[in-house]
Image (spheres, rainbow, N blue to C red):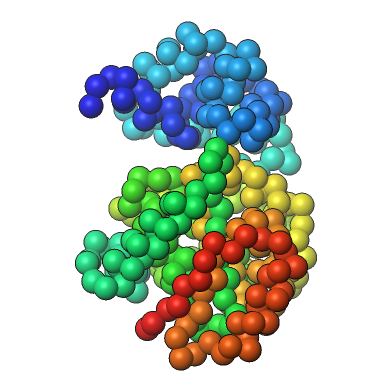
Amino acid sequence: MNADTKDKDLRHNDTEFRAAIVEHCRLSPATVELIAEAMRKSGSGFAESALELGVITQEDIDATTAWLRRADEDQKAGLVESAIRKLSEGQKNQFVVRTGETVRPGPQLILARDSYNSRDEAIRALRTELLLRNEAGRANVICLVSPSSGEGRSQLSAEIAIAFAQLGRRTLLVDADLRRPQQHILFPAGNERGLGDSLMRGERPYQYRVEGFPQMSLLTAGVIPTNPLELLSSGRFERLLTDWRNNNEFVIIDTPPVTQYADALAVATLTGRVLVVSRAEHTSYKDTKEMLRKLATTRAQILGGVISYF
């Protein structure tokens, strides 16, 4: 790989590169917000948008890239932490990611161990289909929905996230099932803090790193709140979603069953894209029809349907 290719890899949707630009160019939180808004409108990267706004120069970009090529991992990690701390101090209402301890995919997630069987091949084929439905210029946020419980929605959410991470794509898996969460079970982890806590208290989200997948993060559901629907319909959740779009290439969101709760409909309304999951010889036609009727009210795009056999 030549130097130009390495430089492009450093600059493409990379948290370290963004943090380095923020630090080296002494960008204020307000300036970073202006850059983020320009990114949303143009679909360009962080550095390109900052350059277009005139808040940095090409010399700034070249100097930052050269430094990142030379820096070791400890220096890079320290730089990211410093940038996050400064931004969170400057904008107390802004959601900033906190990365925490590392979790390991549990035994149910065979795909994480590169085992080639019929299910794994089916997941990879599904990944290809979803890649073909990419939204150009923005992160792909996909909300997985199912009519009832026990249909494999949570496991499929985890498997899709792992499949994208295997391609080196920056991927976030979010457990928005604030009723009966499962992701902290699939990735054996504590569930004392997560999405629910962040929404209730306005705290920064706590994301786990996933062993073996440096580009993947996990946000568990956290302690189950008393008002899940209200939290997922709030402005706080919408702002979190905007932040996830800005910092990831793929965001996979697990939700509660549609026929039992309206939570998934609230999430689907904000994400705009859903993947429907059902289970062979388990999901009734009546429940599926009712789910599709409810989804129509959200005007979310249905990317496709998956029938699970297990």
